Length: 601
Image (cartoon, rainbow, N blue to C red):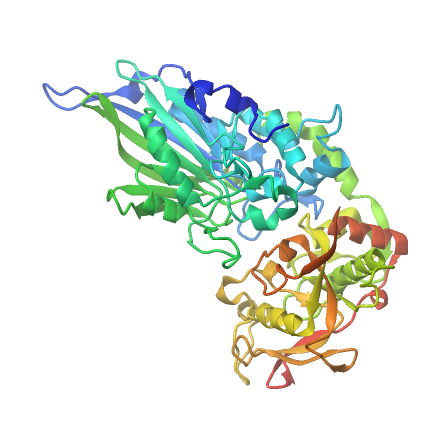
C-alpha cells in the first residue's frame, strides 16, 4: 500500500493532507457564559484537552515480567484501564462535548502484550486479531495520536495495520515519503466545537514525531520515509492551520523538552525539540510532550516572536498520568481568542481499572500471561541485574554469549569467519532476575526488555578502545580514597543505563579516578595488550549499530550481517537448546572498576 494513501488522508481531500472532523454536541450554557458590563457581551468558552504519552503497550496495571500487579516505591499505577476511568471522570466534569483526548506516541512496543500481537499472534496475519492497544484506545475514544519512534520497531507493515485498526488518525507532519517529501501520515486533525450563540471553536492538532527514527529504525525506513526536524515542520504547518480558521492550535509532539539529542550530530535535527518548537514557532497554544519519560505538570515557554506564553506538559509514561490542558477562550471582534492555558496532571493511582476495558481485553491479557510463563529451561543458580551497572554480572554475560554464538554461526564459511567475535550488551534493568530453578520466557524477557535485533560490524582495536572510553563516561569521576556511593556512581551527565555497554571477549579496567576519555586501562585480548590495528567483529544490537547513544565509530563501521529475529528470542532459543542455564557456560570477569589500579569492589 502506498505510504501516503491512508483512510484519514482520503477523508479530507478538501482540506489538503490533514483531517477535518466536524461535529460535537452543543456546549452547555455554563461553558459559553457572557462576560463584561453593559454594552459588552463577550462569549466565553472552556475547552479541556487531555493527553497521554509513551503508553508502551500498558493496558492493565500488570507487570508481565514479575507476573504480578505493578507496584513501585512511589506508589504509581499504570495502564489504559486506569486512564479510561480518569477520562470518564473528566468528561463528566467538563462535558464530553468540551473535551479532546490525544496521545503523543510510542504505543505498540514495550511489553510482552505488544510483542505477542506483533510476533506470536501478529495483527498482520490474514484474519489476524485487532491489536489490544487499538481496541483499548478506540473504546476510550481517543481523537488523535502522534507517531512515536517505537511505532516503527516492528516494521511499516505492522504499523500500517495498526493504523488501519484505529478509529482515529496517527499524526506525523514530519514523517514524509522519502521520494516525494509529501506527508506519509496525516499531519494534523481538526475538530469543531459548537458554542450556543457564538461562532464554533475550531481546534487544530498538529502531530510531530522524532527525527531519530531515521537512525534507530533505519532498516525499516531507509529509502521509504524521511523525518525532518520538528521546528521546520511546525513552522510550515502552524500558519496553514491558522489560515484554515483554527482558533486553537495544540501540538502533540513525540519529542522531549530538553533541547538535547542522544545521537550527536548524526542527524541534523534535534531529538528533544518540543520547547524549541514553542520558542520558535508562533501560533501554538499548547504542546503535549512525549518521548522523554519524564513528568512535567506544566512548563511555560515564551515565544520569541510574539512574546506569548506556550504551555507544555508531559504526563508520566505507561499511562501513569493524564495531562489536562484547560483552555479558556473569549469571543471578541468576531473571533475567538485564547485568553489563558493552564496544565495539570491526574494520577492513575487515584482510580480503579475501568471494568469496560477489563471485559474488552481480559482474554488477550490471559493469553499473554500464559505465553510468558512457558518454561524453557532450568537455572542452576539465581542471576540478577541488581549490581550489573557497576560490576561485571553473569546475567549480562549471558546476553553477550548468545550474541557471540549467533554471529559466529552466521559468519561461518565467510571471509570473516576467522576474525574474533566480541559483543556488547547493556544493563537495561536494575531489577531483572532469573531465579534458580525453572526459567520462563517471562524471566528472559525481563532481562532484555527491548525488541532489538542483532547486527555484526567490522571494527578495529583502536575503534573498540574509543568505544569503551565513551561508554566509561557513564561513571562519575571519584577520587581515590573518596567514599563510593553506588547510587551516585553512575549516570554521569544523565547517561541512562541502556547507554552503558559491556564488551565481551576482552579484559579491561575502568579507572573512575581519571577524567572521562582516559579511563580504560590494561585493555587486552587473549592475554596480550590490544593491538589497535587488529580487526574484530562486534555483535551489536540494531539500536547501537544505527547510532543510538552516539557511540563512536559503530554507526559508520562496515556491516557484515544483520537479522530481524529479536535478541530476546535468540536468548530464549539458546536457553531452550541448552536446557540448563549454568554460569560456567557463559560467565566471565571481563572488566572491573578501579581507582589508580586498586579495585573499587
